[in-house]
Length: 262
Ligand SMILES: C[S@@+](CC[C@H](N)C(=O)[O-])C[C@H]1O[C@@H](n2cnc3c(N)ncnc32)[C@H](O)[C@@H]1O
Image 1 (cartoon, rainbow, N blue to C red):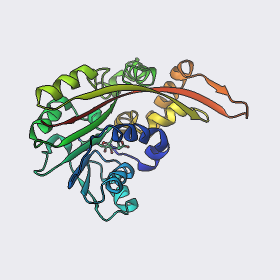
Image 2 (image 1 turned 90 degrees about the horizontal axis):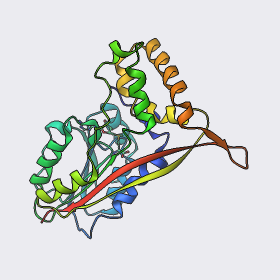
Image 3 (image 1 turned 60 degrees about the vertical axis):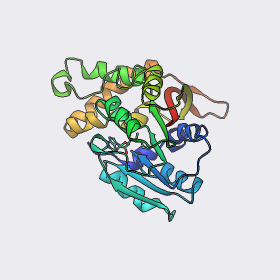
Image 4 (image 1 turned 180 degrees about the vertical axis):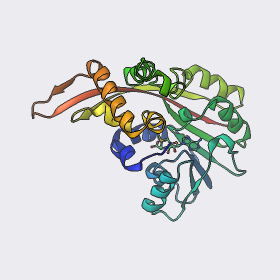
């Protein structure tokens, strides 16, 4: 599956806002070593480097395209990026702050990995994580329905994540506490206003549709997009603002968890 940093960055304002909300809840900290796991194009990793200039900040991602983009745009001296697969990653000794924004949902069995990292954190270290909680919203539920329709079921069997790709906030809260952390867990549904035609399709092109694209031929993928576009239209009606701009509300639930190891 190939990530496209340009497509992903198309909605960078909406995609980075949860990170700033997460950052706002990180407790008083004087870190020397920070890891951003699943750093993507590196724009928010750079914010960490600017926020804590005395710390070394390492952005890790399994996508060569994302790491290349991050290396190309990041300027801060205390910032570096590397390829890593979170599935086989362990928290390096000395890590004071572990951040992960919108990555865990891509990792099969992520709660097992999260538990490992929480147990590996040293006393006093802080973890701050955000995951999308929108797998049952029409943007994703309808995608699974189209994938299960007779036209696509054979080619897309097992390709899309299920509605339970992320856990309930209370599950994460318990996991943090069982692993010896304080747990500050909450959820927010952003009423995201998107512009232009087919904005929800454009959004998921950068993320949720990537496994479908990887599984289909180019022609089949375009046909799938057509089916999906038609199926979601009724769920995300657009409206016209006073200045004539076409707007669509794309509600987006996100789950946040911040904790310090006791
Ligand atoms: C939705 S993007 C989030 C990027 C960035 N953290 C942000 O908040 O904008 C998800 C990122 O997770 C990365 N990712 C997915 N699975 C991963 C894994 N197993 N190990 C490391 N990174 C992974 C993807 O390559 C992608 O860059």
